[in-house]
Image (cartoon, rainbow, N blue to C red; front, side):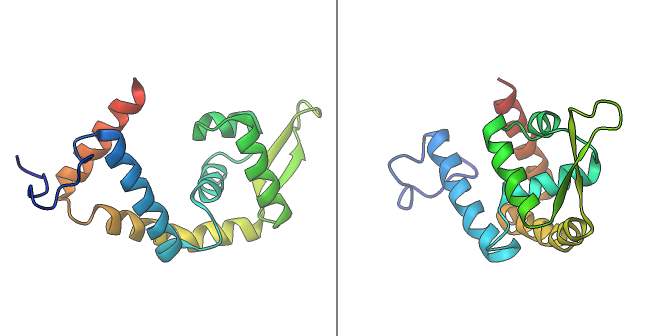
Amino acid sequence: MAGEAPAATRRPLDGLAGHLVRRVQQRHTALWAEVVSPVVTGPQYAVLAVLAEQPGSSQRELGAALDLDASTIAGLVARLESRGQISREPDEVDARKKTLRLTPAGETLRASLAPRVDALQDALTGALTPGEREQLRDLLHRILAD
């Protein structure tokens, strides 16, 4: 079948989508450290990217945007805040609510990492044509929608 590894190089679990997704995630993690940053994690970058697009988000809104639970978001926010990359500020309407914003250092970091994230995507999906990359994203979205 097109796109499959030759029988001699296939592994016993290569017919299992979950196994392949895990292997791709491992490759992504290794490439991230090599191409993007050995210090800033993918989820930390995702927080920076979302706050660049949606400044003033609450932790709850940030968690919803990234599909991460409250405790994970709390840890990410605490780490980025301790590094001076994001700030928590009282909401202008409801002082009990805290909003999150990139600091100038956070924006500088996000901007410096963005081209590397693009390079990572190219490295990860380099064996695919542009149409296949789009198809892969579409299929992954369908799996996640279930």
